[in-house]
Image (cartoon, rainbow, N blue to C red):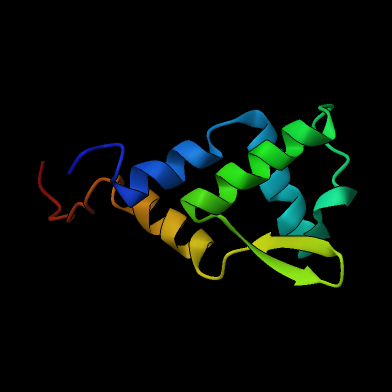
Length: 100
């Protein structure tokens, strides 16, 4: 599969930015945050909006419109998917037979 279309690669690439990782951590702690209320990463609001767009496109976050505001939250199941990808990289368990 082409790495640009592999959803696992896209998911990992989406989180592989310090600003986006900070956004994900904030969403994990707060649950849901309005786009206009993000004051993190020491970057301007348009840059935060760009990072939120990237995170939405690769599947990390979802949006919900409430009146005139757009709220962001972690996509259900995305952390489990991330852990499954990491688990695929774990070495297989070894069996102890008592002999070496």
